[in-house]
Length: 360
Image (tube, rainbow, N blue to C red; front, side, top):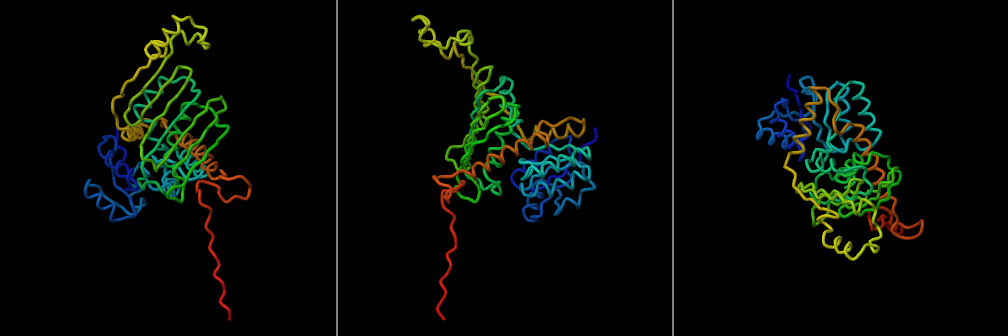
């Protein structure tokens, strides 16, 4: 099978990772790396023996596909021309800044029969994939995603930077429309929100509480899911899964435990997490999620498969994320319609003070 001739556009943190990994995947032939920042581009290309270019137009005729790892602001403008030329594209998340831009890319990919895959890489996290097999009809979900301030992706707020990962995961599990969004957040460094907490309610009754912070002293990437099958807790960083499947005493609906005999109460007390709510904990074997994502991208191109994260799936995650962001910006921190304390900033807007005119 012929190699996929690939260009990586953008030599930021993720672009460099994509280029290094793609170079080691036999399905790809990395034609070059594109970045208008010549100094950053050339240093990377020399280290990894790759050719560098100012603009993708210089090599467009010699590639089959591209990874777009530019700032989100440029996703539409970089990806749309590639799709128009019939190229296949893996674009980093979020797919675009607006749903209208996302719709444009989805339409272009369909029209030109191009693969459009979006880099919601947590779908390829081996811990999430193992946990998803233990989940049946989620009822309540709690997710937390926190980091220190890395100065990456600061062209968008934490909602589109970090929380959208968990929004995408939740949507893939619940598979029901979001009917209500409540959210609040804070700006630490600005100008965008850096801490956000949201409550999503779905048409099927499921509720998801998600927290994201990029100004945290305690990094965390975890999710807890209560479903008809039991409980599953997943730590994405350590790849550790905790699961509980209740025994018959719970499945039979013995909710009023005060009616249990003394012997029954003692049994529950002594065997709560060994028999009644048996807790299992295990670690999933490590795996490189970005590498798995890239390999799937190649498979989709060569074998005509549908990506795990399609443009439409990414568009749905973006739509919910934008609703969360809007709710954050509409939150009022004090009573009264005229308060200036609205949105993620707790400081009122500073208005320039007019200088007094000097008397003639």
